[in-house]
Length: 154
Image (cartoon, rainbow, N blue to C red; front, side, top):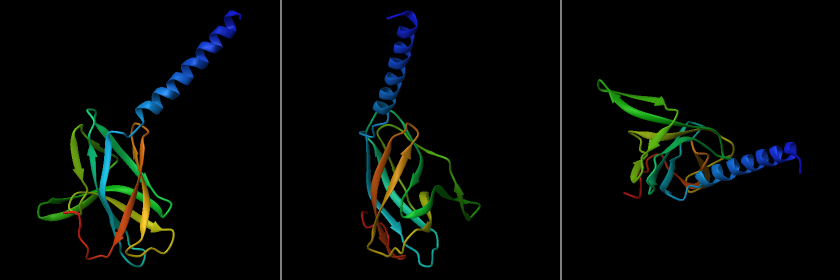
């Protein structure tokens, strides 16, 4: 094997190592998702998605997005009160520090689900894939509930 072949073999091993290392980091083993539900609204109105994310690990994770085959668009939003008025704004990401729990709720962080791709109704279940900065993703089943439903887990 000549010097050029060894250089390419070393480069190939470096690339394979990088891919393996990225896959190892991307495993969501320390994450738990519970109580996932969607407040269903009629007539293609935007729906809110709520869940609890528990980070059992030592390292912080950053939720950067979500997707679903059942919705055309999903974004992360935060509702907050300013000077007595409720405001809602889209956020790029949410950090979940190690050993903490983040609860998504109507008066805080939530998923905004737009443009359902099929007819959905209360009682249906849809899969939403939560995407993290590390490259990890967690597929989660969400239950659709009627507009007047609350979080049945609390």
